[in-house]
Length: 223
Image 1 (tube, rainbow, N blue to C red):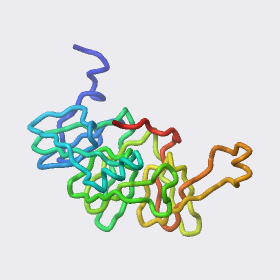
Image 2 (image 1 turned 60 degrees about the vertical axis):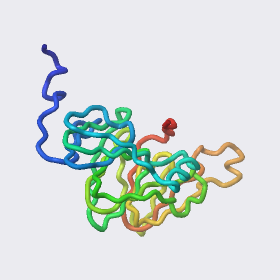
Image 3 (image 1 turned 45 degrees about the horizontal axis):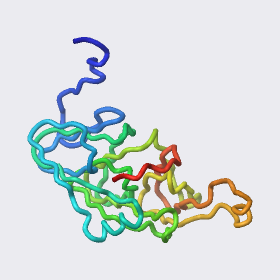
């Protein structure tokens, strides 16, 4: 059988290293020898001897997800083999988390990660209950984190001299040492007259970076 479908651009090549790697712009490959964690339902193919087990969030995590509609529903993948992960054909990226790093990420953007990473679901400081309920996953430790994003993300540096303001529906994540607060960019009078549609943003102060997707469209609720 012949055709462009069977070119080297599409046919999977043998793995060259264990762990996580980029298969293509829309998919990550993970060579499993032990265990790793992934978003529930994100596995699109696998080979080898692998088991997939749903991972509970605990009572606190379940409550936060119920209140906010956000969360990080996970599964543990165990055994020896290869698995491919993707989500709604979104673009995939790999972040190397090193000791001392803290990276906070919206749960909707997490695809998979090494079991050597630690994570905790925390309230975004300064957000209160506004902005749809801002609960993000904070990653630390040492390992690789696979992310998805609608389109090509923007990585914007944040400095102490110049804070950055981002739409709460567009933010993917940021370096967790930044200080966060909610910022209202319209006066009450402007809002009553119709306004610009840009009412509240997340303000980030300090030294670090913020990652933003080029879309303000709210994702569909996951079931």
